[in-house]
Image (tube, rainbow, N blue to C red; front, side, top):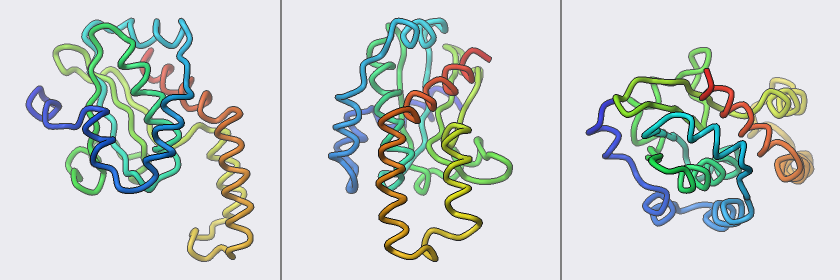
Length: 177
């Protein structure tokens, strides 16, 4: 990552203006989140923090996480956030493969000299285990509709209750190194 590439990414507002799916979910979750002093301190520990996020508006893990990161970045003096769509920027996505796979969202941290400080992708370990147990190796499109409806309801409830915070705690750990 370099300064020019970083600058070509979208700000939070530019990203919000460009999304086509789940705008209401992005807005709701962004507005509802209230960062703690510990959240702000973690992000503020790196002067001139540059945050790169990669996502797509159709992904529940993205709309449940990206607004949290955006809110903290906006409240952290000197921090800047730029967002890249995974499918439009494969060269950036390829920098952050998880076990060779593309997992979103990605949240990567750079210092003022664009040295990578750490990165995180996907969803927290607890959420990942739950989703994996539900899927039982099945692709989403092969799961019966009734089962998917139950899944979505439980998935959303768990994100509201703990997974959003769980993602943030893992993101902060990645930043701390």
